[in-house]
Length: 381
Image (cartoon, rainbow, N blue to C red; front, side, top):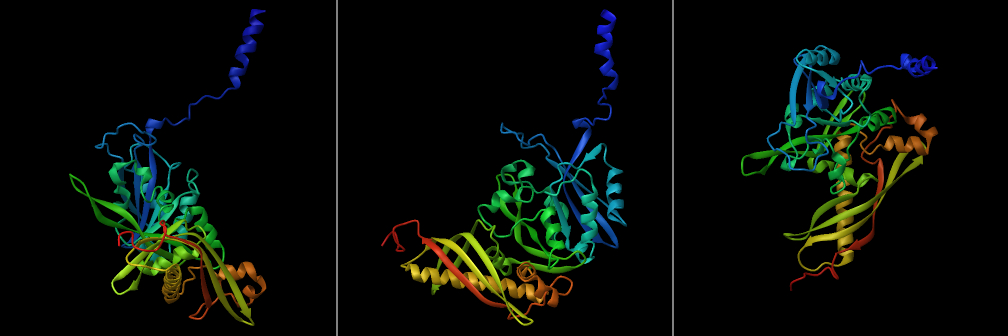
């Protein structure tokens, strides 16, 4: 009886697998970010390895702990550059926490954008939630930059872009999944956030750099069309239904300005088709709240000035895109969705030809205007 009992207990153990191939956490390095450049005829990959000693911790943290280390390697292909990196890394690199990828202007101009994306997506551990950026500044500085007050590096501007986007929706972040979708749909272009460094913070010990979203880079699977930076990119925020909160400042008298906070952006683009002539009516609805101002203003005057400013910024961004033959408002896709037959007739490589008069009307509607006070007059008279 005892022998039967032992057989009953021990027999299942024969078929159980062990954990012999399990990788121990302390025996791995965690890749969080990377940058890809192309110079002197070779690809240069910069990888960021991070420490998880502060991630998800709220207790007092040793500010002197090194949160990340960065190294670079070159190769004739992207894969060769990655394997050159492995030559000088002590432990296995785990890619399951990989969260951001930065493209340099050099690699974009080389037309290798599609090749890099293909390489990253072939890594079995990487995720399509990886955030994508572009720049014309040195890549390693972005991967070394720490968030303010030296918080966890995973909460940096580029590591966690949605958090700050809720407060100021200037440039919409894009992840790998949506990047691929945009490149596969008409007009086969994507807007990638352009980032730059600013030396604008000071501490008791040293000045600090911060990362700023300053525009977009426009790419196709095989071509880089250029950057749209600074004020020229302002119109993008009024052409996205995902804009949460944005700001405008405009003048209403000589040397007098007011600022307004705009929310609840709702964009509706209507294609107007007459024969082979296709134009678009852009309808933007939003709510506004008055911020800083001097003197007395009427609600009608404020609404008119807000409408003029938003319309001007949309036109300015469209003109900048037109100069580089880019469709940043994805008007080709609008026609593709609304009138497939006409799109097939006039499209070339997924795009329709756009010109100065392709936008027929821009209608801005202020659905609600508030001041946060009882009037649009000075508080102190």
